[in-house]
Amino acid sequence: MTERHTPRVVPLLDQRSAVLSTPTAAFAAASRIGATGLLSDQRGRPLRDLRISVTDRCNFRCNYCMPKEVFDKDHLYLPHSDLLSFEEITRLTKVFVAHGVQKIRLTGGEPLLRKNIERLIEQLATLRTVEGRALDLTLTTNGSLLARKARSLKAAGLQRVTVSLDGLDDAVFRSMNDVDFPVADVLAGIDAARVAGLGPIKINMVVKRGSNEHEILPMARHFRGSGIVLRFIEYMDVGASNGWRMNEVMPSSEVVQRIHAELPLLQLEPSRPGETAERWGYADASGRHDPQLGEIGVISSVTQAFCGDCNRARLSTEGKLYLCLFASQGYDLRALLRADASQADLESAIGHIWQARSDNYSESRGAQGADSAPAQRRVEMSYIGG
Image 1: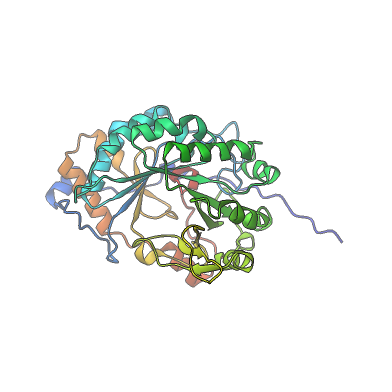
Image 2: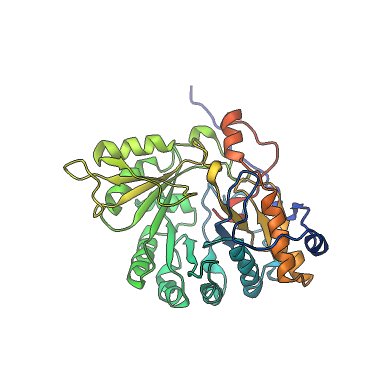
């Protein structure tokens, strides 16, 4: 008997209106927390990494992020007036940097769809950490517009890019992005980024069992020795629109085993505190890591929680601060900005929010069972960025 599968139709709960109580300017002033660069949360985790979503729009319809049956032609995006302006983003970023942020990642949606994104990059590139160093300024993109924009992004001050690429086979790639976009155009964008000096380049591949796991080895072969770091990401239960199922997750340990069987790997030390990717280097004939062959990374956000040293905050495109990728609600910083809060009041408000942070979603999910249903609908990846 042939088994029939009922199509999944997942209603999308609009998390853009879900707001936690944000410290007011008056409260922040009355209970001042100054910016010393030493801010930490309830678990002693510092604030070092800020992900900024600059748009909720994307020209792909990847089924693990913005499935077409949910994000269709009738989907309502945020009006432009709701988005943070580049000046507002820069002002808030200054506050986060004063609290210790060292790395900025621009995300979306697809960030290169935001008109004149180079202007924002120019503004952010002038900022300096509390130690006086330039920020690590990077951007994650699906690569569709990268060939035409790589040079202008570099000229504006962007340092490097991460490109999402879920397979090299054109049919697989077109199926994954679900808008029939050719893989050759993304590869051309990666080449353009390399020529422009936007490196070291990273490639992110979301592995979804039953869809593209057979592309793992072709991807590893292609990027081995290229100077590009290929990272494999477990299919995550972000948001509610992707119909996530645990049986579609391929554990990172299995990804490593597949590659190691053909291309021997050695585990490497983390590159920095709070690193999400576990690093594996390609071995030479003598069994030692050969830097010329490069490395891969695996991000095991489902099977191996890394909440313990998570130092990332996320700012949505209309100015809500999220303390976890799997959060259900955010703090409205735009309201403070547009109420003319002072720099000191913004510093204090963000300080109060981060000091109260205790988020550990992945650890809790692991304790309850990876496929257990969440108590609340979570924010969508397309809205907050990966």
